[in-house]
Length: 270
Image 1: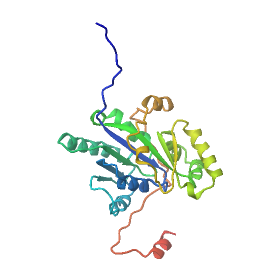
Image 2 (image 1 turned 90 degrees about the vertical axis):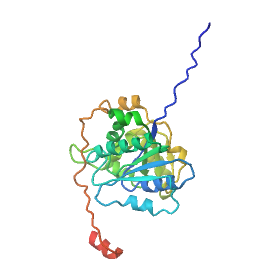
Image 3 (image 1 turned 120 degrees about the vertical axis):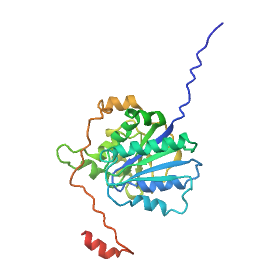
Image 4 (image 1 turned 135 degrees about the vertical axis):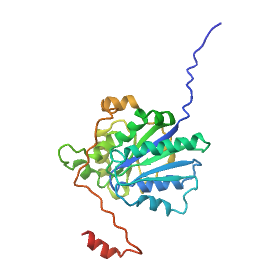
Protein backbone atom coordinates (compact mmCIF):
# COMPACT_ATOMS: atom_id res chain seq x y z
CA UNK A 1 0.00 0.00 0.00
CA UNK A 2 1.36 3.39 -0.99
CA UNK A 3 1.91 5.96 1.75
CA UNK A 4 1.62 9.70 1.24
CA UNK A 5 2.86 12.58 3.39
CA UNK A 6 0.20 15.24 3.06
CA UNK A 7 2.33 17.74 4.97
CA UNK A 8 -0.48 18.55 7.38
CA UNK A 9 0.59 20.40 10.51
CA UNK A 10 -1.21 20.23 13.81
CA UNK A 11 -3.01 23.50 14.49
CA UNK A 12 -1.40 25.65 17.16
CA UNK A 13 -4.17 26.22 19.70
CA UNK A 14 -2.10 28.42 22.02
CA UNK A 15 -3.37 31.94 22.67
CA UNK A 16 -1.75 34.46 20.27
CA UNK A 17 0.04 37.40 21.90
CA UNK A 18 0.52 40.79 20.25
CA UNK A 19 3.19 43.08 21.69
CA UNK A 20 2.31 46.70 20.97
CA UNK A 21 5.34 48.94 21.24
CA UNK A 22 6.60 52.31 20.02
CA UNK A 23 8.32 55.38 21.40
CA UNK A 24 6.57 57.98 23.54
CA UNK A 25 3.73 59.69 21.66
CA UNK A 26 3.68 57.31 18.70
CA UNK A 27 -0.03 56.47 19.09
CA UNK A 28 -0.09 53.13 20.95
CA UNK A 29 -3.09 53.91 23.15
CA UNK A 30 -5.00 55.34 20.18
CA UNK A 31 -4.35 52.12 18.25
CA UNK A 32 -5.40 50.02 21.24
CA UNK A 33 -8.64 52.01 21.52
CA UNK A 34 -9.20 51.45 17.80
CA UNK A 35 -8.73 47.67 18.20
CA UNK A 36 -10.98 47.43 21.24
CA UNK A 37 -13.84 49.31 19.59
CA UNK A 38 -13.66 47.48 16.25
CA UNK A 39 -16.20 44.77 15.48
CA UNK A 40 -14.01 41.69 15.38
CA UNK A 41 -15.86 39.40 17.81
CA UNK A 42 -12.69 38.44 19.67
CA UNK A 43 -12.37 38.16 23.44
CA UNK A 44 -9.11 39.89 24.32
CA UNK A 45 -7.06 40.42 27.45
CA UNK A 46 -5.07 43.67 27.55
CA UNK A 47 -1.94 43.97 29.67
CA UNK A 48 -1.21 47.66 30.10
CA UNK A 49 2.24 48.71 31.30
CA UNK A 50 2.78 52.15 32.85
CA UNK A 51 6.22 53.63 33.52
CA UNK A 52 4.91 55.63 36.48
CA UNK A 53 2.87 54.90 39.60
CA UNK A 54 -0.44 56.22 38.25
CA UNK A 55 -2.37 54.53 35.43
CA UNK A 56 -3.12 57.05 32.66
CA UNK A 57 -3.64 54.95 29.53
CA UNK A 58 -5.86 52.54 31.46
CA UNK A 59 -8.25 55.37 32.36
CA UNK A 60 -8.29 56.60 28.75
CA UNK A 61 -9.32 53.12 27.63
CA UNK A 62 -12.05 52.80 30.26
CA UNK A 63 -13.55 56.16 29.24
CA UNK A 64 -14.24 54.85 25.76
CA UNK A 65 -17.98 54.12 25.84
CA UNK A 66 -17.81 51.99 22.69
CA UNK A 67 -15.41 49.47 24.15
CA UNK A 68 -16.66 45.92 23.92
CA UNK A 69 -17.47 44.16 27.21
CA UNK A 70 -15.35 41.22 26.06
CA UNK A 71 -12.10 42.93 27.06
CA UNK A 72 -10.23 42.54 30.33
CA UNK A 73 -7.64 45.19 31.18
CA UNK A 74 -4.76 44.38 33.54
CA UNK A 75 -2.44 47.12 34.75
CA UNK A 76 1.29 46.71 35.45
CA UNK A 77 2.67 49.97 36.78
CA UNK A 78 5.76 51.65 38.23
CA UNK A 79 8.39 50.23 35.92
CA UNK A 80 9.08 49.02 32.40
CA UNK A 81 7.74 45.60 31.47
CA UNK A 82 11.10 44.79 29.86
CA UNK A 83 13.02 44.99 33.13
CA UNK A 84 11.62 46.19 36.47
CA UNK A 85 8.21 44.49 36.35
CA UNK A 86 8.99 41.70 33.88
CA UNK A 87 8.44 38.97 36.45
CA UNK A 88 4.99 40.45 37.06
CA UNK A 89 4.20 39.66 33.42
CA UNK A 90 4.94 35.99 34.06
CA UNK A 91 2.53 36.00 37.01
CA UNK A 92 -0.22 37.73 34.99
CA UNK A 93 0.14 35.24 32.14
CA UNK A 94 -0.11 32.32 34.56
CA UNK A 95 -3.34 33.77 35.96
CA UNK A 96 -4.76 34.13 32.45
CA UNK A 97 -3.72 30.55 31.67
CA UNK A 98 -5.61 29.34 34.75
CA UNK A 99 -8.75 31.20 33.60
CA UNK A 100 -8.52 29.52 30.19
CA UNK A 101 -8.06 26.11 31.82
CA UNK A 102 -11.24 26.67 33.84
CA UNK A 103 -13.33 27.52 30.79
CA UNK A 104 -12.79 31.22 30.01
CA UNK A 105 -12.64 31.88 26.26
CA UNK A 106 -9.66 33.97 25.17
CA UNK A 107 -8.89 34.76 21.52
CA UNK A 108 -5.83 36.87 22.10
CA UNK A 109 -3.65 38.90 24.45
CA UNK A 110 -2.38 42.41 23.71
CA UNK A 111 0.60 43.67 25.70
CA UNK A 112 1.06 47.43 25.45
CA UNK A 113 4.54 48.39 26.60
CA UNK A 114 5.70 51.78 27.81
CA UNK A 115 7.33 54.09 25.28
CA UNK A 116 10.69 53.36 26.89
CA UNK A 117 10.50 49.57 26.63
CA UNK A 118 12.80 47.28 24.70
CA UNK A 119 10.44 44.65 23.21
CA UNK A 120 13.11 41.91 23.12
CA UNK A 121 12.94 40.86 26.81
CA UNK A 122 9.12 40.84 26.61
CA UNK A 123 9.24 38.58 23.55
CA UNK A 124 11.82 36.39 25.27
CA UNK A 125 9.27 35.51 27.96
CA UNK A 126 7.36 33.28 25.52
CA UNK A 127 10.41 31.14 24.79
CA UNK A 128 12.18 30.76 28.13
CA UNK A 129 9.27 30.46 30.58
CA UNK A 130 7.94 26.90 30.20
CA UNK A 131 4.41 27.58 31.51
CA UNK A 132 3.96 30.65 29.34
CA UNK A 133 5.42 28.86 26.32
CA UNK A 134 2.83 26.11 26.68
CA UNK A 135 -0.09 28.52 27.10
CA UNK A 136 0.62 31.33 24.63
CA UNK A 137 2.57 32.01 21.44
CA UNK A 138 4.14 35.27 20.42
CA UNK A 139 2.17 36.26 17.33
CA UNK A 140 3.90 39.50 16.47
CA UNK A 141 5.58 42.69 17.64
CA UNK A 142 3.79 45.76 16.28
CA UNK A 143 5.84 48.95 16.41
CA UNK A 144 4.12 52.34 16.17
CA UNK A 145 6.19 55.14 14.64
CA UNK A 146 5.49 58.87 14.88
CA UNK A 147 6.30 59.96 11.32
CA UNK A 148 6.94 63.55 12.40
CA UNK A 149 9.28 62.97 15.35
CA UNK A 150 10.83 59.52 14.90
CA UNK A 151 14.05 60.80 13.32
CA UNK A 152 14.96 62.92 16.32
CA UNK A 153 14.47 59.85 18.55
CA UNK A 154 16.61 57.67 16.25
CA UNK A 155 19.38 60.32 16.21
CA UNK A 156 19.35 60.94 19.95
CA UNK A 157 22.68 60.26 21.61
CA UNK A 158 22.30 58.01 24.64
CA UNK A 159 24.61 57.70 27.66
CA UNK A 160 27.24 54.97 27.42
CA UNK A 161 25.66 51.55 28.01
CA UNK A 162 22.08 52.74 27.49
CA UNK A 163 20.13 51.48 24.47
CA UNK A 164 18.31 53.67 22.00
CA UNK A 165 14.80 52.32 22.56
CA UNK A 166 13.42 53.74 19.31
CA UNK A 167 15.99 51.73 17.33
CA UNK A 168 15.39 48.55 19.35
CA UNK A 169 11.63 48.82 18.87
CA UNK A 170 12.09 49.02 15.10
CA UNK A 171 14.74 46.31 14.94
CA UNK A 172 12.45 43.74 16.59
CA UNK A 173 9.26 44.78 14.77
CA UNK A 174 7.29 42.21 12.80
CA UNK A 175 5.09 45.01 11.46
CA UNK A 176 5.60 48.78 11.54
CA UNK A 177 2.69 51.23 11.68
CA UNK A 178 3.96 54.53 10.30
CA UNK A 179 1.52 56.81 12.06
CA UNK A 180 0.66 60.52 11.76
CA UNK A 181 1.49 60.61 8.04
CA UNK A 182 -1.01 63.46 7.69
CA UNK A 183 1.44 65.70 9.55
CA UNK A 184 4.35 65.25 7.15
CA UNK A 185 5.09 65.57 3.42
CA UNK A 186 5.53 62.77 0.89
CA UNK A 187 9.26 63.49 0.89
CA UNK A 188 9.32 63.07 4.68
CA UNK A 189 7.46 59.75 4.40
CA UNK A 190 9.95 58.47 1.81
CA UNK A 191 12.93 59.49 3.95
CA UNK A 192 11.51 58.00 7.16
CA UNK A 193 10.50 54.80 5.36
CA UNK A 194 14.08 54.38 4.10
CA UNK A 195 15.46 54.84 7.61
CA UNK A 196 13.04 52.24 8.95
CA UNK A 197 14.06 49.77 6.23
CA UNK A 198 17.73 50.41 6.97
CA UNK A 199 17.05 49.20 10.52
CA UNK A 200 14.58 46.43 9.66
CA UNK A 201 14.30 45.26 6.05
CA UNK A 202 11.79 42.49 6.81
CA UNK A 203 8.87 44.18 8.58
CA UNK A 204 6.01 45.38 6.35
CA UNK A 205 5.22 49.08 6.81
CA UNK A 206 1.60 50.23 7.05
CA UNK A 207 0.83 53.96 6.90
CA UNK A 208 -1.86 55.40 9.15
CA UNK A 209 -3.50 58.54 10.47
CA UNK A 210 -4.69 58.53 14.11
CA UNK A 211 -3.56 54.87 14.30
CA UNK A 212 -6.48 53.71 12.16
CA UNK A 213 -5.48 50.44 10.51
CA UNK A 214 -7.24 47.17 9.79
CA UNK A 215 -7.43 44.97 12.89
CA UNK A 216 -6.37 42.06 10.67
CA UNK A 217 -3.06 43.83 10.08
CA UNK A 218 -2.35 43.80 13.82
CA UNK A 219 -3.92 40.68 15.36
CA UNK A 220 -3.10 37.06 14.53
CA UNK A 221 -0.60 38.01 11.83
CA UNK A 222 1.75 35.06 12.62
CA UNK A 223 4.63 37.45 12.12
CA UNK A 224 7.24 36.52 14.73
CA UNK A 225 10.11 34.39 13.43
CA UNK A 226 12.47 33.06 16.12
CA UNK A 227 15.16 31.97 13.65
CA UNK A 228 15.30 35.39 12.01
CA UNK A 229 15.40 37.07 15.42
CA UNK A 230 18.33 34.89 16.54
CA UNK A 231 20.19 35.75 13.34
CA UNK A 232 19.77 39.42 14.16
CA UNK A 233 20.43 39.04 17.90
CA UNK A 234 22.21 35.77 18.87
CA UNK A 235 21.79 36.68 22.56
CA UNK A 236 18.01 37.04 22.28
CA UNK A 237 17.35 34.03 24.57
CA UNK A 238 20.00 35.03 27.11
CA UNK A 239 18.01 35.63 30.29
CA UNK A 240 20.99 37.23 32.05
CA UNK A 241 21.17 40.16 29.64
CA UNK A 242 19.89 43.40 31.16
CA UNK A 243 18.11 46.32 29.53
CA UNK A 244 19.59 49.61 30.70
CA UNK A 245 17.39 52.68 30.50
CA UNK A 246 18.53 56.23 29.91
CA UNK A 247 18.45 57.55 33.49
CA UNK A 248 17.70 61.08 32.24
CA UNK A 249 14.10 59.90 31.74
CA UNK A 250 12.03 59.60 34.90
CA UNK A 251 8.45 59.73 36.13
CA UNK A 252 6.70 61.78 38.81
CA UNK A 253 3.08 61.00 39.72
CA UNK A 254 0.87 63.49 41.56
CA UNK A 255 -2.77 62.85 42.49
CA UNK A 256 -5.15 65.70 43.27
CA UNK A 257 -8.85 65.75 44.09
CA UNK A 258 -11.16 67.49 41.65
CA UNK A 259 -10.38 69.02 38.26
CA UNK A 260 -6.96 70.32 37.26
CA UNK A 261 -6.48 73.85 35.94
CA UNK A 262 -4.56 73.26 32.70
CA UNK A 263 -2.84 76.68 32.58
CA UNK A 264 -1.64 76.38 36.17
CA UNK A 265 -0.55 72.79 35.53
CA UNK A 266 1.46 73.82 32.46
CA UNK A 267 3.08 76.64 34.45
CA UNK A 268 4.03 74.12 37.14
CA UNK A 269 5.53 71.69 34.58
CA UNK A 270 7.57 74.47 32.95
